[in-house]
Image 1 (cartoon, helix red, strand yellow):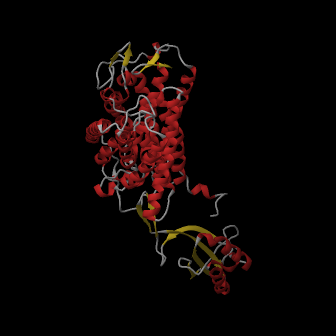
Image 2 (cartoon, chains in turn yellow, brown):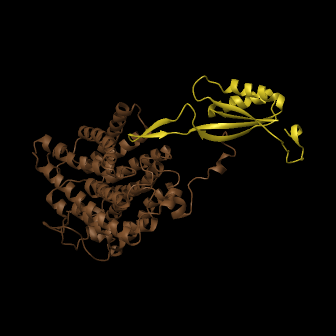
Image 3 (tube, chains in turn yellow, purple):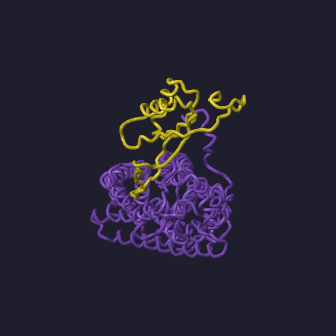
Length: 112
Length: 431
């Protein structure tokens, strides 16, 4: 099993969610995130004083998948989230040792 | 003199309008601070409503306007017996056909908002109880005497006037409080910003306004209430009230344009904070002048107030003091400009009790008097506030601890937080 984690532009969340549902994933977890990458921050001006905003709002999408699905899910996310401009985000894949469904106690792929 | 029901009705309404400015100010200031200190910011305004109202009916009104007073520097030192004055008419350099109690209520609202204005200079870092003590002392020692200098035209019986304030008797023109309210609060704000020192992380970390919609709401309430402040200062429903009303509107409008014009040219964007700040700067500047100048002059005074104040708010970075919400840049500088502008644009053709300024053949005499009033009020307020502030800081302490400031004054001074972030995500929000 793999955990696919994506850091994305917040306004792309709807499209990514729809694309993942269409692909057939069983569930996703979304959380608010902030940080910087190559895009860096931006500058805001209040009463003439400039404030550098280093950390930009992003969303983190996490999906647990079978090993065989991981490349496809990454592809689905990248296709749906891409705008072609700097700051589109990143997607990475990490191995997962075990997964347990809380309600039934099922393990491994059964629990996804 | 018989009571005029029309005048009295307008003055009752005006008094309520001016009261609304202080909660409006709480929104205006509250939106400009960070989420961890918005409640403390609003409480500093609301607390003045409580404290000053009580002081007013015990001895405050007497100390500013008491008819038994004979001094040019303060009114009567006595306990008020307003309950026995229900049938009396107001007498301030002559009788007005409104009840004395209505005049007292109207003037109370000015005494409330003035110390509340100061609080913007010490955002995020003041202990609450010392602030309330400051408000009580400052009102007694600074506001009430200065209001007497400027607003008390004395008790006139026949041709004899007793107890007129020093600046009022000199012929200084301040219709609604450019000196007594705005310069007074602005100079005090500067002194307190110096006494309390800079916020932790000032100029290093972001201290962006947490809610510009709250700032806009506050600016709107201030603007609305300001019609009572300025037009109500006519003490009647008449042509001068109409002039003050119209001038208030156009000066605020022109200042709004002036401020965002500077921003667009200088920074590339016209901002909502700039529009709100510009409107308030225009309202401040027209406050002393609203009954003495023609509407076209109010446009000029307002536009220049927007330009001058939008530049003045940057002074704190040059002089290195943390006047957090620009009480100095808006109220002190705007108040000075407005008070001096009467010496330029004042016209006796507009208002028969007014004098001609420099541009209307009156020479520099009026401008000189206005400058004297500016210097006296700013100087007295600054040094008196410095002493009061230092006395509080050295005894019970005025500033919160560094830990308390970093964690937030809302939690540490009031045991509350303004927003429950984690609970707000169910239902409405996308994530």
